[in-house]
Image 1 (cartoon, one colour):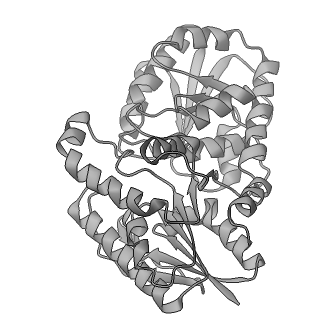
Image 2: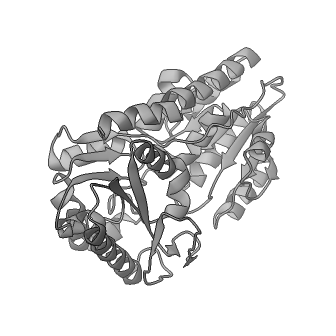
Length: 377
């Protein structure tokens, strides 16, 4: 039996949107699959454990801060141990999900190199949310960090990007290549979608996920302030984060009714919380380098139109499918005018279009079709 290894540093939140479906594809193609992941979870900074037969936990040092020497060391240890393990079992295929960039750089340690596919799930250091001053001061270190990714990237059988923005960024650095492919997130489809809108007495906005320092709270509040001049506004939050109180306080000052549900994992309860929402908010600071957010995939899955400011993939999908609006400081008045002119049937059409985005871009059928084109087994 052929052997395949999947490297995924953060198994706990990469498995259900990509790795699970890749694993199924390889198993169905006759491969024995091993997944290598760290025994430390980045989000909650705690040790990670899982009882799954084909998962090998790689022991790494812990760290407390996102931008720290400790995190870099932890990633370097993970990368070296992964390739040492790979040399022991000598698989026929390796799928390396990155970051960290050191996984790509250390791929040269594979002594009997066979098929290697590299996934770029994030661009480090380009996507790190630091000020321009810090980015300038860290310029040399960031260049070395970027080179950990770029030096070995094209010595592979394929490079998979999670969005077109990342593909364009790498093309600008390394040139065009036939190795490049875009493979979007994939989710199990519970087929739970919101019901039709039946009222325009107030505009209900929703937000799902972490409310942290990369969320553009200023733009959200500007949008709500201008919209509230014409419509009563309600805001529904499912999530948590260090900036949540700031957002709620700002909305309250504007006279906006806020329903805060906290963290919800159950898809039925999420649909229930957002059922009355006319739009969901997909808003980040312009300094964040991202072309597609995971929260937007959740919005599309539930059939919810989106108020967006994310460029490239999110903007293009929302525009092409007519599933919401992309806003900026410059077009708020025009966008709000368009929203106020919409009728109930227009909102319900946007709900259908949003769901269509999910079905045509993020479903399992689409994922499997695309992965067969990239990894030909």
